[in-house]
Image (cartoon, rainbow over all chains, first blue to last red; front, side, top):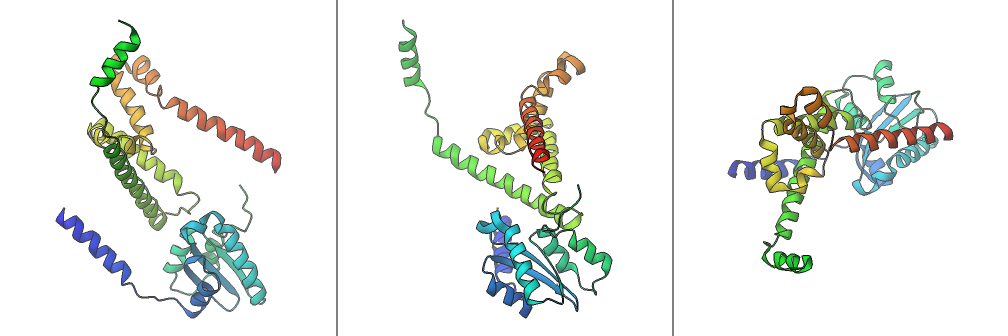
Length: 120
Length: 144
């Protein structure tokens, strides 16, 4: 019981002390769209990929929010291909991405973009 | 003696149900089960190629299989005695219902006993699930 309590307390402390490592682009996105809880992005010369986790109470309309962000970013960056996803898997995968983005990897990430129609 | 009178007398001597305690235990155990489900779901998201849309299927399957084993070993029934509805309402109740019926009727043979009785309780859940998905599929096909 004591060990369990200690584990829970340490987990709370460790998660609350986590440093904010958002890039300026992500911080700007969070400031513009307050419904975003967590955001991860990949910005290259021709592609912008934004993966996000929406705040719990707004998750009923998360795909609409992602589509709106895609539309807005598309207007703001007309020379880039913009992809967005509110799927948690996309956020996990973007976090894992440390090496330069390959076409194969981009295709995998694009498959999480819910605004793109998929063949069943 | 009239039936109503017997009922009234029996009701007077009935032990009072600890409603608040039952609700609290259900809430705690049900919530813990859901938290476990979320952990399993995150595990599949991190380590396998499932997206948030598809991760529900392996999570539910894992929870049902876990419950089936725990019921077979006789652990789940002990938890259910304390947790009440907390263990019955989530999807784990389904696995418990299947295996409980199978254990109960095992003496009647594998085909007529286990085979025909294991889905007595859970069968209605499967039928309603299959039927409603069939109806929704038809509606989706017509609208597309």
